[in-house]
Amino acid sequence: MKNAILKGTILLTVTGLITRILGFYYRICLADALGAEYLGIYQLVFPVYGICYTLYASGIQTAVSKLVAEENSRGNVTLTSCLMRRSMLLAFGISLVLSILVYFGAEPCARYFLMESRASDSLRILSLVFPFCAVTACINGYYIGCKKTAVPAFTQLLEQVVRIGFVLYLVTLPSFSNEESRCLAAVIGLVLGEVASNIFNSIAYRMHRTKLLRHASPCETAGLTKRLLALSVPLSLNRLIINILHSVESVFIPGMLRLSGLTNSDALSLYGILNGMAIPFILFPSAIPGALSVLLLPAVSENLDEKNRPRLNHCVGNAVKYSVVIGLFSTAVFFYFGRDIGNAVYHNSLAGDYIRILSPLCPLLYLSTTLGSVINGLGKPHLSFFTTVAGLLVRLAIIVFVVPKSGIYGVLIGLLVSQLISTLFDTILVLKYCKAFPPVSEWLVLPALFAFIPAQVFVLLYRFLQEETPLSSILLLLLTCGIYCIFYIALLFLGKIIRKEDWKD
Figure: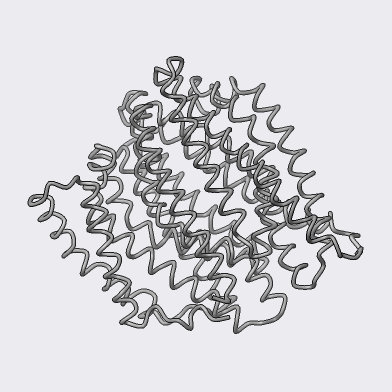
């Protein structure tokens, strides 16, 4: 396999799938340990984390990835090393300031922003991880720009393993015997996982840098900081606005649910079931389009810089096709097996209902992730920002005006409608600049037929096996969906949807 995108995608995908499988086991344990209400409180701290991460890492990581890809194509090894020093110093400085602000402002932040004072201790613990995440983000951006995904992939896996191990150990201790203390244990585990991954990440980069610069010659670095800021500041500001809107959404959902007639405990419980149980399942198959999108940005930037339009169109067209192919299969699985998944995995029928209703999100969400990366790689992050904000504003409007009347189903409607709007805008923009979409029959019509028609047969097979065999429901689901996946891939090969030439340089 000579194609760097294919190799990187496979590595990130395999690691992502392993990480998500571990994550699902962890979430099942967490749901049992915390209960739906404290799972909702645990989810509430992530809007603050997301806003801070955007300020100290998100834009800088993307800028590093793009600049490293450009400079490596010109052979400027020393320049990329200087770029890393400056980006890490910038990210670390911002993260340290934010860490101090959140630590000492945790109480008012929890009470007046999250509207849940019980989240203050979790925020205080979470703030300690910011500097470690900042350095890790810069190093991951470097490796992704180099199209070397082994270190970011292992970093991701190490973080998850350490986090799960520590949390599962902590909840066995007498001092973490109630739901409130176990919520804190989950945040402590997150911090320890990030610290462990940062230590590994930093050592790996240090060894790589020493080897790389051994025979490197000096080069001109004038204007490097200006280039870094010119790319990272607009991206950070755009993503900050997006994260603020996401945070407002996360805070509004429990509030609007209370207005629909639910108690505070019930509202947090439904929020915990939706965000902590149902949506992670919808996101699970996105490991492949997510890996593609990470690697697409430097690939698009490199091909754009080389004025290599045919290769650019080939790369984008394949990414679009495989994102939709995976999304359609995921929709079929979650639509036909959603209730069974909720009951078997979480012993919660509501989680299963939400998974089934949200199943159409899969192709829209996976495609939008891929297209957003393409738009950023084309040097048009403001357009990607516009489409995302448009979708979020629609979602917020639905949450404010529909949820008080229709309850949690208004939230589900908002998720579907807003994602449809964002994906349509992204598709129009990419078609304008790339002309890269394959024939509709190849990426939509045939994959849809191959996904939905056999799914009806396999769900009947599952029902039959459930009645006739003593195997557990989870094992039966894995067996049935695994055979269904193999059958679907075989149909894609027979229909020439998947072709070997798709992945040639």
